[in-house]
Length: 282
Image (tube, rainbow, N blue to C red; front, side):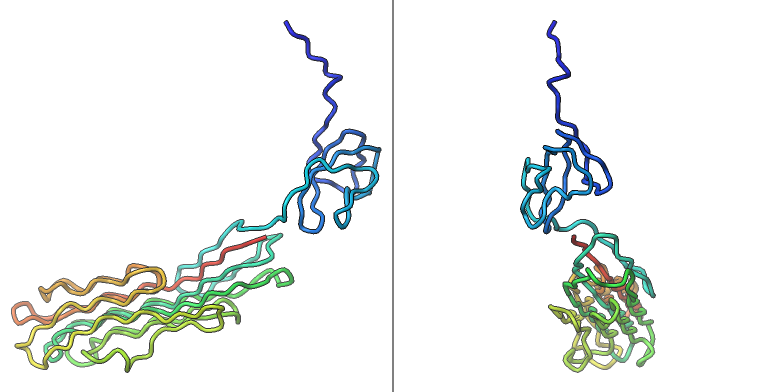
């Protein structure tokens, strides 16, 4: 049976370098110098001597492996419940990429006068990379609520509600999408839009049905607008009973309801809440 001579095993792994630890010959540590993580072997007993400075090894240490610049994605935080929140920066995080999307607008409900009401518009989106190395540990966060679903009633009472604004402190924000209303040109409506970001996006429009103005004219499907995250709710598919679908993706609009001569009118679908998504980097 082979004999293992423990005297031949000399290297001793000591983990991350600690300035107060006494190291002896053949101790091995890791240490970050100028953003570069490397491993070192102790060649002379040493206490309080950083293994390297400015890329040059101390006389008590030799490089074993010289690494690459540290950093990269490490974690994320998601805020998707409507209302106010607080973002807390983890230790060691230097940059964050923030994606802020406003709430989607609610779909309008069908009514006998305008047959079908439009789908809600989607919330806008702002995307920003922020240097937080010197930032205080917390930032206020607001997530905009999705707009309310329009009821199946005559007149403007069946309009969908507008989505709320989302924000990440004073850095960037995004307004919510408009609520679905009577068959109108979407260019007349205030779209959800991002502001303050490196990239600012406008939310998608809900579809509009250019219907007639009497009970005998039946409307068509009116879907909710798509947001940065995906599609909105599907409109009433034609029976005048099934309500428009709620917004599906964060910040998307709800589908619209419609009127039929046989079954009456259906309600719209609620818009989806917005979101604040924070990606964290060292």
